[in-house]
Amino acid sequence: MFDMLMRFLNWLWALVKSVLEGLAKVAVLAVIVAVLFMIVGLFTGDGLSRNMVLTLDLRSSMEDASQSSLMGLAGARLAVMDVVMGLDWAQRDSRVKGVILRVGSGDLPVAQGEEIRDALKRFRASGKFVVAHSQSFYSDGLGDYLAAAGSDAIWMQPVSTFFPSGAATNTIFLKGLFDKVQAQPQFVQRYEYKNAANQFTQTDYTDAHREATTRVLQSWYDSATSEAAADRKLDKGAFTAILDTSPLDADQVKAKGLITNIGYDDDAANAALARAGSGAKLVSFADFFHDKRSDEKSISRPQLAYVHAAGDIVEGAETSSPLSGGANTVNGDRFARAIRAATQDSAIKAIVLRIDSPGGSAIASDQILDALKKAHAAGKPIVVSMGSLAASGGYYIAMAADKIVAEPGTLTGSIGVLWGKFSVNKTLEMIGVEGRDIGIGKNALFLSNLEPWTDEQLAAVNKQADEVYADFTQKVAVGRKMPLAKVQEIARGRVWSGADAKDRGLVDDLGGFWTAVAEAKKLAKIDDGTEVSFREYPATPGLWGAFTDYFQSSIATMEMLRGVSTVLQTSTVRSLIAAVSDTPSGRAELKATDLPGR
Image 1 (tube, one colour):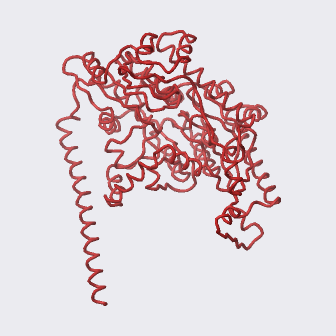
Image 2: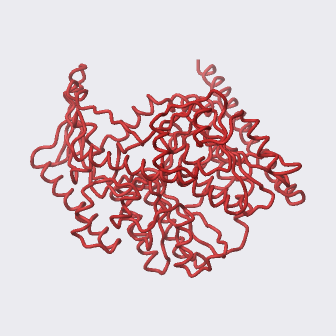
Image 3: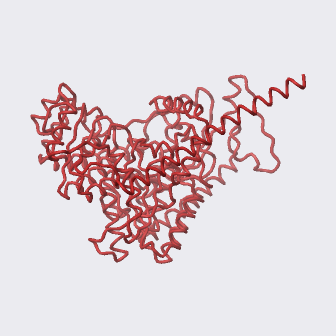
């Protein structure tokens, strides 16, 4: 029996060893190939055409920040800021004559549509063209069309449909379900507009929830229709009247001036190539972006730190889960270290902080804000560029900035506090499960999810929430140079659009990333016409780091996870995961959830 066991263990070790050796060989081979490509590149250039039209596909949902992985390096989905940076490089590359967009099913939030629109307008202002093609504008929201509206030509496929009509959202209220399963939610919110818990505690919108949500939707509608109408050289009233008759077919929207041509994707591509001139070729925007990114890092220019805070704000060092699909997080330790490094780098003239976050941990948010304050005290100007969302903790970390720039459609503010938990002991009993706590110490079971807070514990939670809220509003008053009374009036947990936030002094200017860069250059005393380079903090892993991370898992495991990831991306599962992830942890949070269009 012992001999059989030893033979089995030897066989198993040989199998594991061969697998590890195989993975190591593949990793080494990949590195060798990469080195060979770099050597060849030194003699042949980047291999791109001397006359090209970039093909940019916006037909899938986009994150604000790209996710660091080997798959990302291999050309996975582009992020919004990849598009913004890539278009800047493209406008300065004489080989690029224009861009052809594929649009219509990305369901882009208004703020993302505005950011991409701004970048494309800047690209066109350099003398280059943009052609858009849609097989149908499927989303009834305005973000997809807004991204395309400023194009030189907009094509739609024959017999396709134009659905954009306005701004809308929905909330699924779960109180009835929790009542049925006897789960007891306990929440402390500061104040009535901090509606993140309403989906768990209400059966309908409260007056404050409805008021804030309706105002955000109205602001989105007003800004998006004004911008799109201006792009298409239409009266705003006429443009909104067209939207009110949606859905429309391609012939109808062409007759009304919302598109310029009807044809298939190859028809639009051929028109773009003809405009680019003899010998023009289509080149993937992703390929161009990845090729140019390494070139841009080697160019010597005045340097700005680029800190990209995208995702939930969490405590601790960086962590990732294969099942998360590489979701971005803003880790307190990692970002604080990165900001300190940028502070100590004498070559860094200013910090551009890009925020796309609903917030999260109050502790981690304060840690990051402290690092930014110390950077500012050390003489580094700080300018914030807000993406589609910079709310609660995402707004909190902006309080060290000299200037805050947001898009009209950015969701921001939510100056408030959420604290709560669920007790599910009775729920477990309904299915025959008995949960029992044992704790030594009066409040040892404070975070237990089996029993609710006592009246005394709930009073302590309220006291702590008041203290966190007072600290938050005081930091806003100091950071925004506003009277505390005014901050308290516009805070109360309310989310504002960027346009409304500007009217109330919560942001300084409306615009995209390059508006923020212009402000940073001004503060750093860099001439407006001088090009700058960006040093990314925290730095993304290099090629070797990506290979190392990738080969820590077997190829078979990665294929399995790819399938799981596909299931996780279905709308039903994503909604369920979102509801679970929004469930409070029992700690104080500066986080905005259940937001319009999110």
